[in-house]
Length: 188
Image 1 (cartoon, rainbow, N blue to C red):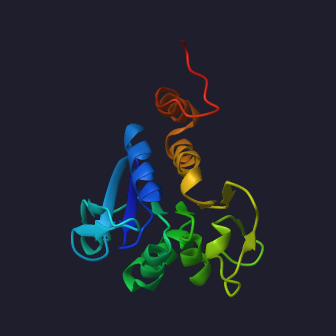
Image 2 (cartoon, one colour):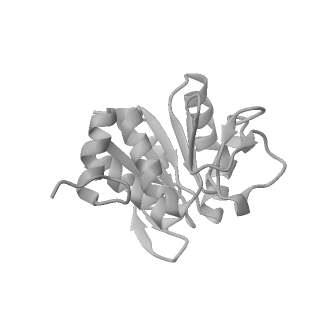
């Protein structure tokens, strides 16, 4: 069973964190949510979330993918965490999958993981000009081992893309169908 790390920082976007965790778990993926500080994380809309464990504990384990939720303050906290930076750089060096949504692609851009001609997408309002990569106006973009997505409204598409990468198209379809998402056929 694939294992995925989802680090949560105060100010993360609820939809981007919770929908990704939920959809991956529906697919049978072992997801570990890890708090940068303490167990309780306060999200962007002031909802409280209890992480599975601390980031310190999680980083001593093996994972198949790291997924970074957005939310401006949350993404900044992820970007400023030296422990996470070291892990992301090691993941990228090994070509292991990394995913980021909304403001979180800035974490990858700031650390030189997305650079030059690397295509990515993100929430346009969160994009500073100072970092690298090539922005494309698409909902979900995959470049090498990196998957990015535009924002809260693309959270289901993003999560299902990650399910497909980890578990295959058949599993993606079997997870999507009972959720009755737009564009997914539903047997009557």
